[in-house]
Length: 138
Image 1 (cartoon, rainbow, N blue to C red):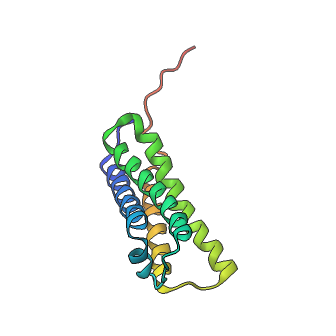
Image 2 (image 1 turned 180 degrees about the vertical axis):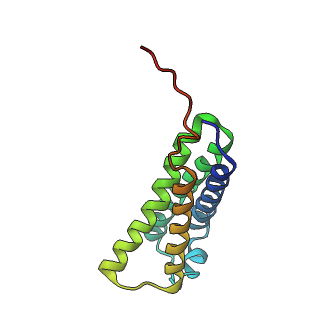
């Protein structure tokens, strides 16, 4: 499959976002979460539990970006983008239902994640015009 300009833009936005957010959580979790009004203490176990998924998110972001330039990684990059940007909002919605309304910063993150999910779903929607030609064998 050859990526269209819109698909490259979608993977670029998703990848840069995931890489940046994941790197921030991994390397400066106190500063990152302070932006949401969450104060983290110096507890090593808590910080480890935050840094680990942060590093995973950064790695998925790097995979999304790599999918723009490496054809062999395109399918994995799309899957990563959809898993991240559908999974995070799903978790936030569960939190809304079970825990109540979070801070305005968390709600803004939810809107941002839903926007990227919508962009990826739109950019990678099935289309006959983009379908690869198939040879019918009889």
